[in-house]
Length: 333
Image 1 (tube, rainbow, N blue to C red):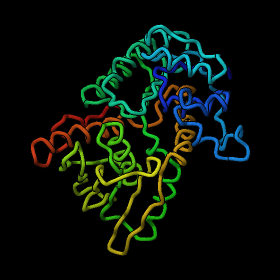
Image 2 (cartoon, one colour; image 1 turned 180 degrees about the vertical axis):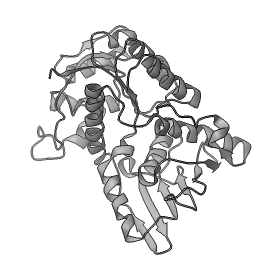
Image 3 (tube, rainbow, N blue to C red; image 1 turned 90 degrees about the vertical axis):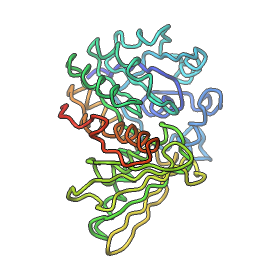
Image 4 (cartoon, one colour; image 1 turned 60 degrees about the vertical axis):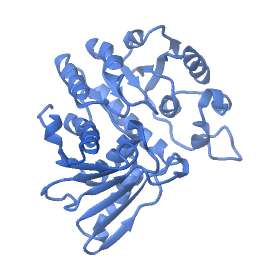
């Protein structure tokens, strides 16, 4: 099969994370802060072999187009990848003559994702939308509606939703039996870009099906309680997301899981582990393009955004908010 031609819309650190696993590049240029934005130091950790990448490449992709509202960022990224990706003058151009539109997003809140993804979806191009899927539930639902209308698969995932290290930690639940309560420590995450990681980590460990949320704190979504109601095989006492809990070593997340029989604590899930999550997601994206089917349920993608939307409302109103209040639960697949 010919390589999947990829058009990337935005040239930030997440673009570097994914591109460096699928495209031949200059590691020494990647090492320069102006170009690689620090990404080099998580991919090249053989310090006596500075040009040896520490992760396996994912074959079958070729980045052919780039766009960023900051033209210099796109120019620098193209140089890292040996000048092969063509620079586009508008994000609408990126979806022409490609097999996949890829929208990376490291620090954004997702409010522009509907706008950026729409041209490619309307052209029938499979699209990966980095976290968060959207800023509001209505945009998330509109993206799914658009994808179904044009019969094109789309997908959105946080790295923490697929990080193998988290999957291995989940396998340790057998040590303590059915979890009754969980805590996710997410450091000082005051923005949507961080909140969605904490929610995705909880979804990875405990599954979907949150019914309601409560929220408090001096910063946005500082402390969020996820309540699964009476659903079987979910923590009956809920899961707390601590998004204002102090500094983070290289963006480290942690989880603690409690039952009537004991507790288990996770190791750190940090920038040094995150590339493995990128690898997993890239393999899922490849399968999506080949099969023309999304590799994650639309309901789970939307639930993540519904949790954030409900948490904002709960923090503002100082009361429990049910996800059904933000109109999310519908069968969309």
